[in-house]
Image (cartoon, rainbow, N blue to C red; front, top):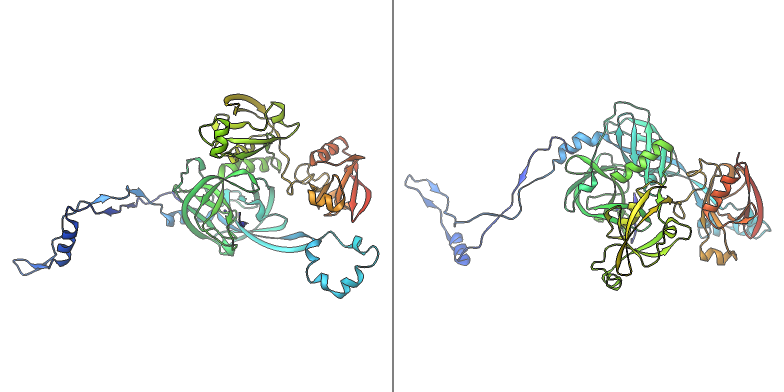
Length: 502
């Protein structure tokens, strides 16, 4: 379960009506209450004791009759399709994390670290075995399972535990870190499945039920209501989260969120917590978002998202007033990326995007999720507000680069051709290393690892040209499919490293 620190059945429902009645005000309420309290039971003519005569009341319903969900039926019907997931693997840990630990105080380490060349022999990362757990649910009887990408990240072995306690090996077909969706396949048939619902029909206040394996306790069910819709969370630009107050804890990640009709409407993914446990704020990925990622993963093994090429922010009333808008609705463009689709059609800072393909944009997160729902190359109609007037334009979306710190050149985008996960240097790293540009190696696999490139290296150049962006590296790979030469900086030393690709 991802934790945001400081920052988340129903076939055959029994019609169980609930009615809460209230009391109308009595014309002499004080006297009526006193009479009621002082009233004595009286004997009837046949000697039986009769009940006291209550003051006349006119019952008025406080709540309209409603059908409550039959949680027992929900769990019985669809609980068997919910699985527990355990993963084992090896995760690379940055060597810098050990510098302030016990190893830094070890006399042996202190003695040798002063020798010439010792620092260059220290690995930039170390591999640590890990064991993780999460939840998932079966969407097809032949063994297709949905879960969160962070549940199976770096997993080498994945075991799926069914409700009947059978354990099956599973293969990760693919994962999308942008939407946090992963698809698993297990070799089995005749498995129970869930029903898929429509999260757009959810309203704030609707009942929801979560089933999963919090802390490894399989088949745990918790209930709540929808607290909010369309939540944008820091670092999650592609997902309009469903916020609920259903208790969700570590281990619930990847489990289904059901509506009162017994349909899966979301995948429990994150919690907001200052303690690591449930605090009343849980967030689920809408199932329609998850299914779009699933379709691409099943077809190609990876997911491609569209991009517009703008940085946006929410409006407040003061900003809305300054732009001549009646309401603070829309996504305010703060900057436009050069050579992007937005730049090509003339979008500029200060424009407010109010609609995409006729769908209203109320917050900046609405724009991100609406754009990401399209495939690269799709044309979308935008309605914008500029210079106190509405304007319409059509833009052709491009392919989105993966987020900084999550991006992959090779493994996710190019079938493992290069095998590098890269991100640009931040300002502090540039200052510390005296570098003007470069890309930090987050992870090295495949051909790059075989060539000796390690996590923590900085790619300064590629085929004699300065390395400024992941897109530039990817383009160079496409034009040189046999091999490339990377200029690497490591511990203040620079060296060209040839990487054979084909």
